[in-house]
Amino acid sequence: MRILIVNGPNLNMLGIREPDVYGKQSYRDLKNEIRRHAKAIGVAVAFFQSNHEGALIDCIQRRYRRIDGIVINPGALTHYSYALRDCIKAVGLPTVEVHLSDIGAREPFRKQSVTADVCVKQICGKGFAGYLEAVDELKKGKA
Ligand code: DQA
Image (cartoon, rainbow, N blue to C red; front, side, top):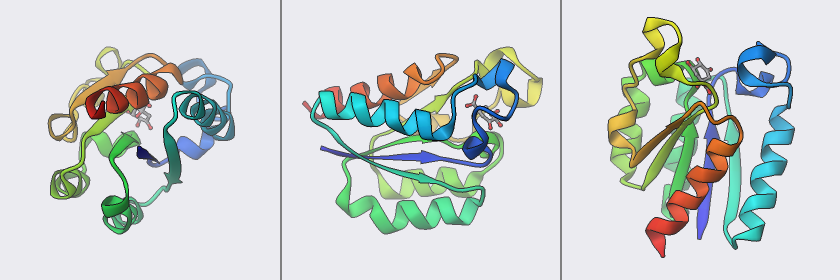
C-alpha cells in the first residue's frame, strides 16, 4: 500500500511557528516519525509540502493513479479552499484530514473545514500522533 502525505502552507515551519500550538518538533521530525511508523506496519509513504494551493492540487493530480490513499493537513486552506476540496473529491481516493491542533477549540474561522466532508475521517488535536493514526486508518480500510 502506498500513501501520499500532503502538508499545506506553513507546515514546513513546524518547530518555529507557534510552538505552544504546534509543538517544538520540525517538519523533518514529522516526516521521520511517519516514515518509521509506516515502515513498521508495511506501508510505503511519499511526502509533499507546499505553501501554494495549486502546487498541492498539481501534486495530487500527478500522483493519484499510483497511490492508494492520502493523508492531508491542508493548513489554513482547510477553511476556504474549494479548489482543494474539489481535487480530493475528483481523484476519489480515501483521504484522511489531519490537524495538529484542535481546530474546533480555536478561533471561530478555524471551526469550519471545507475539505472534511470529502475525506473519510478528520483527526484533530493529537499532534504528530494524528498522522500515524491516519496512516493506520487508511491501512485498516484497505485490509
Ligand atoms: C492546522 C490548523 C489550521 O487552522 C492552521 O491554519 C494550520 C495548521 C493544524 O495542523 O492544526 O496551518 O491545519
